[in-house]
Length: 68
Image 1 (cartoon, helix red, strand yellow):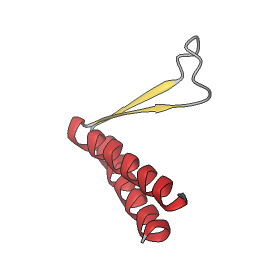
Image 2: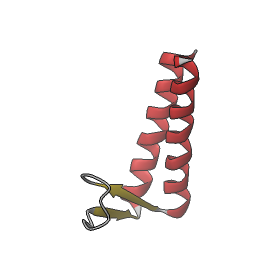
Image 3: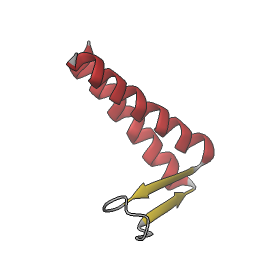
Image 4: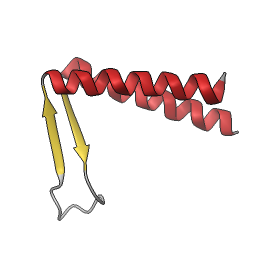
């Protein structure tokens, strides 16, 4: 069961990172998800690509360490 959850988390991280690279835009939520606080930061351009690559590496690392 844990392997399945870690695998899904890794795949979710890879998917969100791929989306950030393709769109060249990433939104980062800071704090809680209360709608009255607009605390999301939008990262664009090369910074979004770097965050996307780091996210893909992290997702692959999670899958390699906990699933395989």
